[in-house]
Image 1 (cartoon, rainbow, N blue to C red):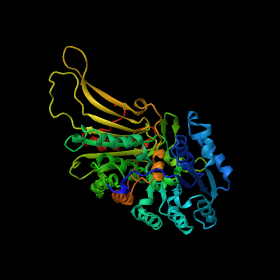
Image 2: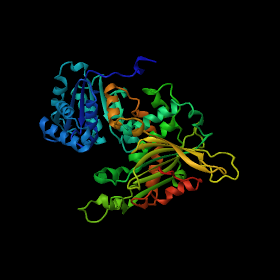
Image 3: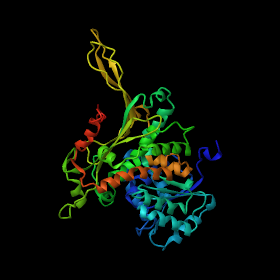
Image 4: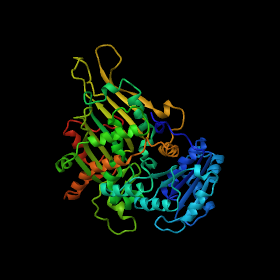
Length: 504
């Protein structure tokens, strides 16, 4: 093991700069995550948090906005007055426009005018539109604040296709080395996703079963009950395939299918994930027609009551008429990893908005027993299934077949062994951003996407986008509050399978 592979340590000083510091992501996720880490005493002792935005507010005005954000997005029992004041005392705000060259000397002066500036870790979090990633990094280089200790964090999407992803990566790569670039996917920071690695590689009973010999198929579902909301402008140019499949779902697939690394750390995990992406069977136009389903939610009824269609959500309450959008809000597809371990095992991916439940889960369905050994018994044996719930109730459930207690023959009954993180561990489960932001500060890239991963994912997705663009068939409509279009169920039914739901 080289010195670069040793777990990174926490620095003594950090300047954490958030571009888009007054935006929704900063106030809803980034700053609450930093607050929790500060509350637990995990931030470097000498940490400053610098919000950069176009808002014409001073430090006190920014502190007031952040205080309101913490009170809105955190449970009252998690708000410690002393910790809140400590975080607010770390805050600064600068009014800058990433597209303009004016005012950047203020950021230079703030970052350079501090004790031991040359020993301070600088984190630049780009919570802005992807088109600003390159120009922002170029400005940072111009004002000479990028050194070997600097790191940049990029939110998805990294481009809208392979060519634009390469353009973004090239622009950022001109300023930062690859080891300094952290492409964040918050799903990889969730406890249950990290625990998937531990479940697979720290428990020897599973490894012999984790292959095409014993696994029938794998399902990965990320379902949302909400519509597009205020993201309609972005979403209508992206769609579910770009917004969810190209990153979140493919990353979950990689963690399920990857080979055991030499150890879990730094490049080893990312090397194995890349191998999975490179082993995905390319989809021909005929494959896309047969093995993919795209849908768009129509008006329907949810637990909150009647909700409008995607077209009406996109139009907005003040717009007369609904736009004729072909953007998909639902995707289901069948993938195959063509390697020694997984050849022949289908991976079914599904994601959508305005569905009947909010859940992110992985279901590994094992093959059924090859022979019925209990003649005359009541009930039937069912395939064993391992449910890994990523959200909202993080945990695992192993479905087995057992004998129901009682005399007079054998009655077979499905039962489950449950692991709820909330019940098993008497402590708050940290939000994904808390883990990931601390990894950035420490310089640990294990749970972040490397450039070659991002581009390999785009390479696999692009034929689907191209075929859909040429297709005269609209996305299939499905009523809001339902599991999606019927064609998604038919995708599995023709293979003699069905989607597994959490309560089954």
